[in-house]
Amino acid sequence: MSGDALIIAIFFVALANILRYLSSLRALLVMMREANPLLYQQMNRGNNFFSSQGDISRQKRLFHYIRSQEYLHHHDGAFIAKCNKVRHLFILSTALILALVVSLFFVAFTGL
Image (tube, rainbow, N blue to C red):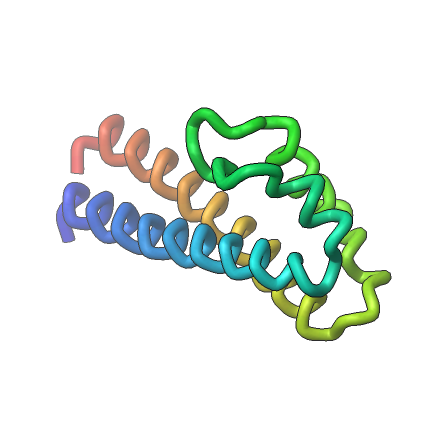
């Protein structure tokens, strides 16, 4: 297997998982409207959460909410499951991007 094929394969797997993560994050925001209205209001003032013009402090707030697992004290089991899924997909996507970067350096320096 050539190094280029390895990099392309890891890239497409990482891309697919990033798209899954973003889709799950959008579904979490929709679910958050019913399950946790106060947090939803803090996160989604306007419809520009995912745009480059979006307020980064709201995105960081959601990131820290999921990273610190504050959702574990919530009463809705489906909301907890969706937050867990988003958290696991984020970790998986981050690991795949790291694997892509490592494989890029590995292929570049070994000349496969």
